[in-house]
Image (tube, rainbow, N blue to C red):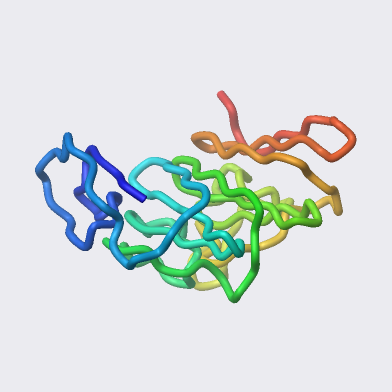
Length: 167
């Protein structure tokens, strides 16, 4: 994978964080081959061929899904071994889907963008969930899209759902 642009919190995944713009693609560190990439606001994520998710960049809201609020200038594994078929990065959150259509989200939740049915996060970080959590409602999705502070998905039978704030 290659990324370019701003890199102030390591969102290019090349092992550095700096204030210089990067107009030329630079290789993402770690020697990981990705089949899909998603970029949010100051963080990026990728899926490997076997569905393992990795994220890098700004971790302030838990959007890297690794159990902390720390930034990372290199890809770090998401969650506790879940496998995903699709990943989407929003402004302060990330969502992914399993092969069974279950959606999981992590990161900032003050607008309900994680779809948990609440506006809260982990007990030690009330704003955010630092690891993947299932979207409420027991629905099976075929696609998910993470926006600024909202998320939308389409069920396997074609019905659209959205949660969070989209104003």
